[in-house]
Picture 1 (tube, one colour):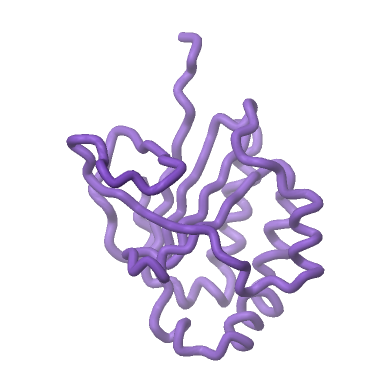
Picture 2 (cartoon, helix red, strand yellow):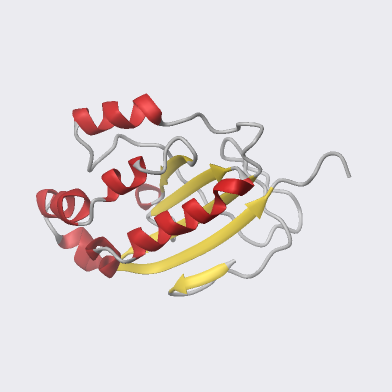
Length: 167
């Protein structure tokens, strides 16, 4: 786990992704993050269609690497009108266009935590094959250099690998 900005979470030896909210978390858990899928706020119908056409499903057998990137944006971001956030997100930062360049090598799913009053506004889950890790790193660098990232208060970069089932 790398703290990119803001406060870090305590280090843990492993992460378990649960498909739904578990009321009884395993004993000894250190932290939990929750998010839900919501309607896309910053993408138009044409962009959504382009994404669906090339976005792979999660859980591909070759995608043994993952990254969980929790992000909290500043109140200044949320105070902007939706049209201005959209302009920063895509028209000036090219968030969607940049991401499309790395599909289908990198699969992703966005979860929203703000409406759940979680500590992170967004939880982005990425999956990729080991050979695609450099491309994923390049994508993350490009996004972090964009205007949009000036509004990020807290960002963690949690890298995971699936244990080898055949030692």
